[in-house]
Image (cartoon, rainbow, N blue to C red; front, side, top):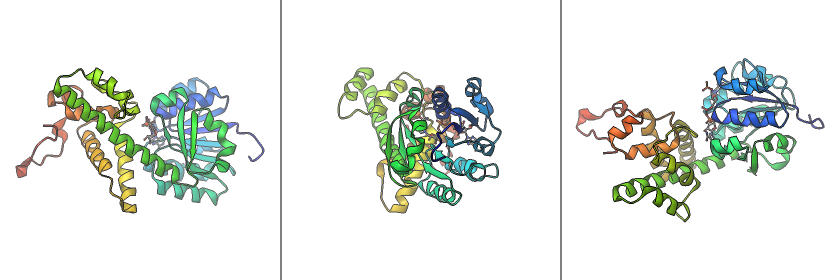
Length: 320
Ligand code: NAP
């Protein structure tokens, strides 16, 4: 593999992000084999020329590069270490690159397990959202140094426009969690602002336009606040995945003995949103927590699903 060029790429996980990434890999001319838990979500890539594999192992067998873009750390463990997993099936010298936002510790374990099998595994979570994936302009956050990544750079560049090297396994995930912590507080920031604007009776869109050009703005506000204000809660980035990321960040913070009040607050809000049925909405659905029950129910939330503490007389909905 050292002197030969990458020809065959495997992709495990063809959800919102994976499907878009796979499209760019096909466009770049690689032979692509795909696997996803639900085959239907791979159909578009298959119709564009990708081969289907029934298991992660089968996808990995012939590949020079295996990309994984699944949901949770448990899914990552499953596709790499499970009985039909990638690690046992990949051929010597192959590169195994996990694009999932997952646990730094797990990334280190996978890297170490791969090294002893003559495989190159590194974490490479991404930012840029569904838009970035569709445009092929994601930012990649590698848990490896530049030299280690170089042989597979053309594959990675087919769906990204920037790559940061954090030097060692797990460090890409640690850096990504920093991004998620910052992002989550940006989300709470604009959702607070929108609620205040609404109550003040000022023009909400004008307020967002004004804030987005200044120090109070963020890419999160620019892209997502207008969608929330317009009542569009379709996912881009799933609520349950931001909840997962904040949980991972808080676990790491606990290990490292740092306190993250912003992440604690945003975790609590996104956790509530999951409990009332918002898991599969886009992260902009945070705005619904500030709405009255009628509005949030109409958008699909169910406050009766919240574990009740009514019996002790302290029951109250956080949004009231
Ligand atoms: P998604 O739409 O849920 O995609 C995940 C895909 O992985 C699903 O199609 C799922 O299959 C598949 N999968 C999960 N476990 C599997 C397994 N054991 N075997 C085979 N396939 C499996 O989520 P996404 O938005 O693409 O996000 C993927 C990851 O990227 C997450 O970790 C997320 O946090 C991160 N991320 C997302 C964004 C974004 O804006 N969306 C941005 C940056 C990073 P099913 O079809 O059966 O569910």
